Image 1: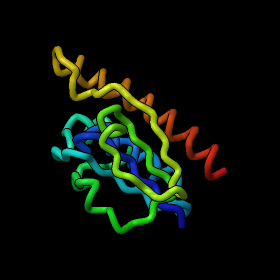
Image 2 (image 1 turned 45 degrees about the vertical axis):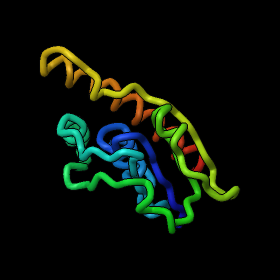
Image 3 (image 1 turned 45 degrees about the horizontal axis):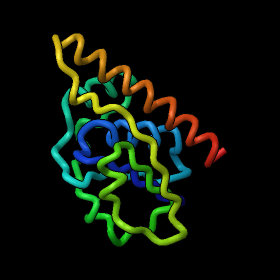
Length: 138
């Protein structure tokens, strides 16, 4: 079974949402992990946005990338520029992929406006994960 790591800075929004989609799209084809370079815990708005899609990430841990040092990943996907810069070195066999998404945790405004930003970024992540899954796993 292939192994995928999705990496961002806080492991609170973008990497968690991507892990949720990839785990759903690639059930039985890949083990999907997420981590951060400075984990902060799951953002409740990210969990709420994913639950609207029927994917519950509320119980996920927020993990530091070093916790997975002993796993040989087939793919490491960085989803923010900071994580790309801080990404640990992986063996040559690892496919390193970078696709930066806006951080919905930076959204300001009313609660409705903030959730609208989470939904917009969620849509970008869903589209990316769908394409990634089809291109790399058929």
